[in-house]
Length: 113
Image 1: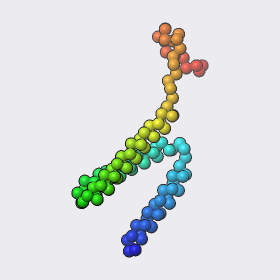
Image 2: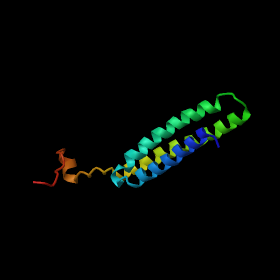
Image 3: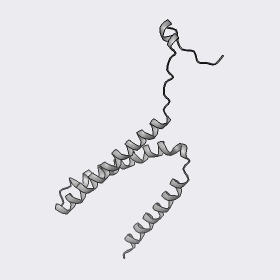
Image 4: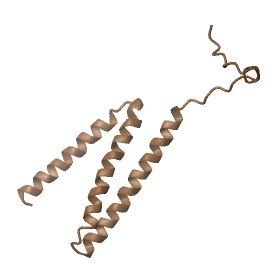
């Protein structure tokens, strides 16, 4: 194992540990914005996998690039679907107007005085 590989392994393990520590300490209120940021990072990896697939460095590179494009696309689309569902949970339904207000054309009362 050469020194460059050792440093790369060290950075990978350190990044995994720091990432785990950060994600486990995120309050529930911030999960939706965090998911959106994660989807943006996944989109960047999608661009990198497109470059790998189209680099024309041999059939193995093209096949691995295609697999990376497929996995990154599923990750991005799935992340945005989940984010959309989470945002719909917090959306309030508009209060239906009363029958009298509809008939008279007056704006509905808020109920507070």
